[in-house]
Length: 266
Image (cartoon, rainbow, N blue to C red; front, side, top):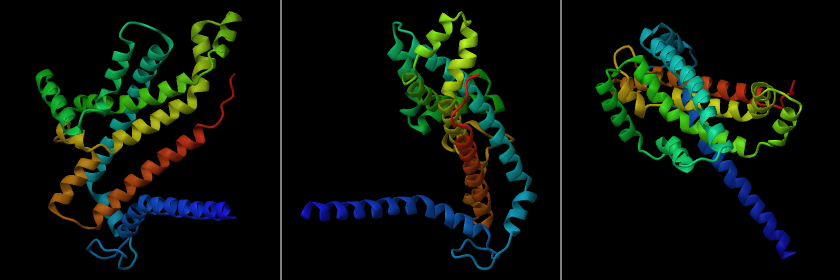
């Protein structure tokens, strides 16, 4: 009897803790989105009235629109390059045994261990030396550096659980290695690839620390532009821009969730 009561109490406490965690994660976003619809001139919650004026202001602001376009372009290209490089690196690390394999793995994951400010400062100095400072290419390289570890880590975990007997069965039927890769390996790893792509896109799209060092002039991403704007003034336009960022992030996650379902091998 006492044991059942304790189990019920612990279960109730666990549900309360989960509810508090969910509220802590969701409430800031809800407050920002609600504030963006205010009809007033100040950021205030609850908002005073309902209006889309600040979304119209965002649409009419070439400053934020250009930054949004740049952020989407950099995030998309960084995700694509990170997937290509990360898949190759993960495949090599997990499938082959060679001298220095763990050193290569540690090197690929090292940007996760280096403080973002130090990494940004180091990349900025390196790009000045290479003549890539404050260029689109330099910004893209920096974003690939910070997104690549997430891709390698996610794909390495997927490949570690991969059943290689399926590949061996296909090769025993005289399937070419590239055909096995295209029809067996990649389709079965697709959920992991999509998850890695979402991690890379969201990390790149929301990156601030690195973009502050590598972006300037016409190469200023949306998070950096918001940061610069907040330093000068704080109005509901910032909430509208932040809401748009939240929407893009949620859309990326929902698309990934839809696409990462079970795949049929053809």
